[in-house]
Length: 376
Image (tube, rainbow, N blue to C red; front, side, top):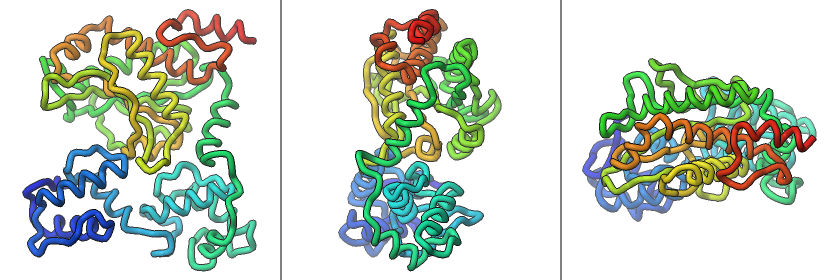
């Protein structure tokens, strides 16, 4: 879609401003729909609150988030449709079902099959017509009942329990590797390097290590492919993956920007993937400990790939191609081997119980089987 930013005009800008007014982020829509400084600041505030990239640009993700924010639970009938309903009303329904003990999956704001099944189970259990439609009678029942799941976020509790039950060994687990960009979209570029090529090479190095550890490793794309983030998430969901690692390289306008950062699902309003955050932290710490990349820390984001995957997903931004020092590191095959080893160890450490875990930066590929054998 067309990007809208400071200086843009037209009906789409008027629609954006009207939504910002309804959300209380803009005092009043100007008579002449111009994307001015006040609109820019309102968009940045909205992006910050929703866990999006804060750039003041209304692209596909920000526009979709603005549309989603318009809906409140009860504004419309919700049911499974060929084009799924999406919005804050769906997210509120999912959160309410989870609080009542019905597994609607991740609170992603999309009315999919899992949400429909959870709603039907709720309706059957409480003597309602199990039609999978959230209408007035279902909404009244949802509001009347008290919370049944206590002790933390229902989704977080399910994530932790699933992690605990999966066991310490990597054997038999499915990990989806997602090299960013691809095809004609080469991503960031600098100093003769391209993001798409770097992450393809890194994914191949990590894939070999995972397979050697007994993991079923799958790639979201080949050299000529460039799926959308929604398609990449669907790929992982369809294959019932245990984890997703999305590999990227960053760039910035300033050549002084450098370092590695990791991202997990988080909306900016308290909804987060706790296991995703744990994996992101492990990846960040292992990469920083084994390389001399600057630590740019771990962050929650509401990006489409992180939100739509049903399993913990982490996006790694491995250095900046706009930085001469980072680019020199990324050009070195030995450095990429070190990063691949760090990623593998981080995945293993996610599953290891505390008594078998090792300090950050010291566990090696050859130690994994020995650590697991010693724990039996």
